[in-house]
Image 1 (tube, rainbow, N blue to C red):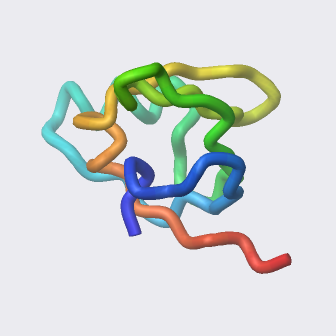
Image 2: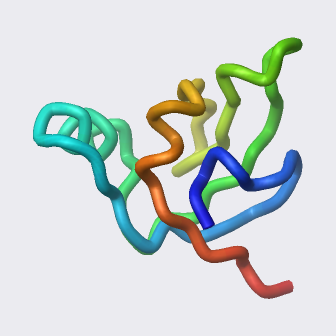
Length: 76
């Protein structure tokens, strides 16, 4: 599953980060690295961007960029 499809309030673990060279580097620099827990906190009124909770801070990300991040839903 990709990060843009993760439901509101759901927690997951990043398994892979894709995208082209500069985009991939930017995502990794923001802390979106494999084996990191991430949770969808909010969505904008029209659904884009989404606000994530990652490594203890809030991060807003466009859905277009979130499609490059593969996640696995965390088991409760």
